[in-house]
Length: 307
Image (cartoon, rainbow, N blue to C red; front, side, top):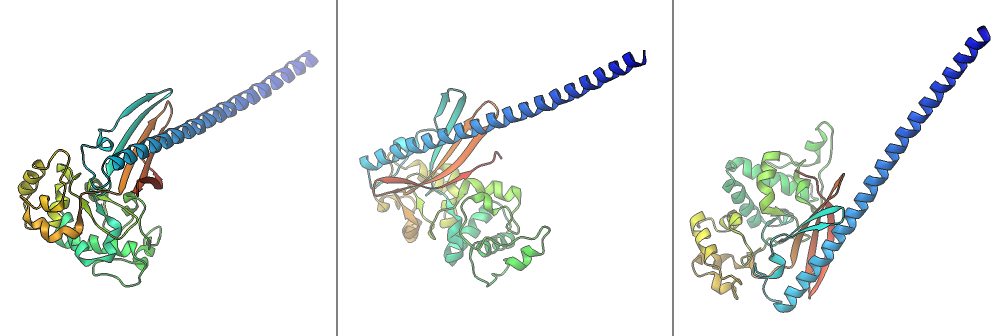
């Protein structure tokens, strides 16, 4: 009886070990399977985004071939963001003109551009002194100098944070990089996002042919003596295929003549936002495209998080 009992215990022990091993192996197999599936879908999403970049480049090249001197909302690139139903994925594509936003990278280099940015912040109902501090903090964050602007902050301020960190001391690649800047809150960044961008240059230039009505604060910041109603009325008078010359734009909004060095009717930078929705994951990417001499180049790619 004792031998039978020992044999039974041995069998039960072996069974428990086998069940445990099977459970562990099964869990690891499921983990490996889902991990591999996730990697496969991410890779698939990357190729979908690459295809979207290629299509956007072809469209921009075709528009430039038709009219190399103007960029306007009647061109093919400005077609409302298409939605594609693909095998195992849904693809949303949005191409926008990157000359209809405030280039944050221009801030440290020009005091007049800083004054324009401060007025833009004030138009977003940000108090004047706070707007000046934000302007200084962003400019200090980007430039590599040691001089601190009034209301700004350099490395010593950020090193006192928990955890400590340093300023970028270089141009930004994406507006989301403003998050750690002193004074920037999620609410302020959310207000700014539709109106700002980052470009690989020190200029701030607006394309009057592609400016949308929702972007009127950009023009109001540039023209402090012009009201919202004046600007919206002027935008409604814009020809469907845009203006041919800058001089034509001055009709109805004469203050533009004094700011023509900030104005253009053509664009060389475009922002491509792509979302590839798959079964278990979304692949989101922002690409900055440059059109120059009829050729389109992807300057950089930046993964985007859902906000």
